[in-house]
Length: 86
Image 1 (cartoon, rainbow, N blue to C red):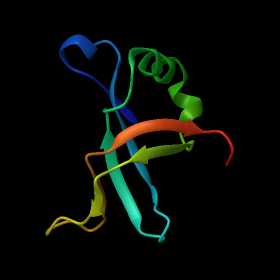
Image 2: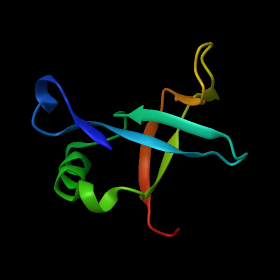
Image 3: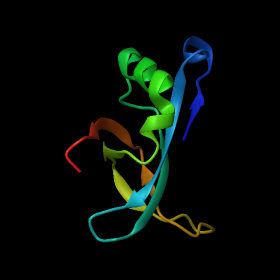
Image 4: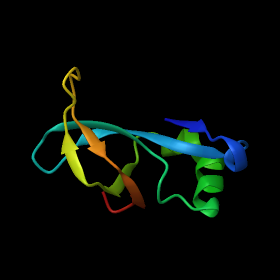
């Protein structure tokens, strides 16, 4: 999923919601707005319905679980690219 941004990004994608498993099989959920340039934000806005379920490559400082959380989260995720080879 995704949501609109604020301020300069009010009419485009502010962040995308991610859910999946890391290389160890751990369920990870996160929202990511870093790493998205204006061209990618416009692409996501125009194609959001067909992008649901697409694999996304991100980098993050760590995968962690907050004290009251039920799933792990990516800490400081940065969007790298959509994966079209999977």
